[in-house]
Amino acid sequence: MTQGKNKYLELFLTFFRIGLFTIGGGYAILPMLKKEFVDEKKIMTEDELLDFYAISQSTPGIISTNVSTFIGYKEAGFPGVIFSSLGMVTPSLIIIIIIAAFFDNFAEIVYVQKAFMGIRIVILALILNAVLKMGKKSIKNLMGYIILIASFLAVTWAGITPILVLFLSGFIGFIMGAYREKAGEK
Image 1: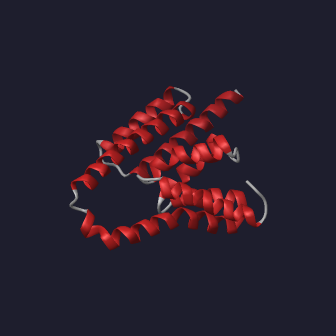
Image 2: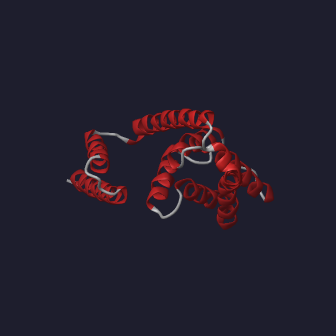
Image 3: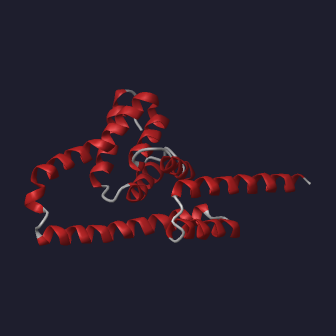
């Protein structure tokens, strides 16, 4: 990232671009964030990005805006929060205003409905790609796979709220870490 006032403009424009091309919400943003901030700008590690993303999921609000807020703060303090958050939400605001103005004219067009169906499929592919890449780095042992499967089953089939599953998984990870640390001291 650049220094001074240009840093704020760069944050705004980077998140504006991400916000403009991120269709599908918080999960679809992950590959773009990784490419931009981990691979290209190298201002954070993949683990830091995963931490920001996990915290963003468990805090109130839109995941993509929460992530942009955390990255903006990391890069430029409180002004970075403002510029990165504004950059993230401005494209959506513009698009929503345009769609609202013309929605009745477009909602029933078959080609528009088919386009959105295609977009949903691409979003699913992006999410699966991000999950597979991040999963390889995040899951380090058998217990990690057990937590993954149990969390997936708890959310999808048992209907347990993801927030509770996040807290329980974090608690289990904390207990496991404390146990390993204690076992290592013996």
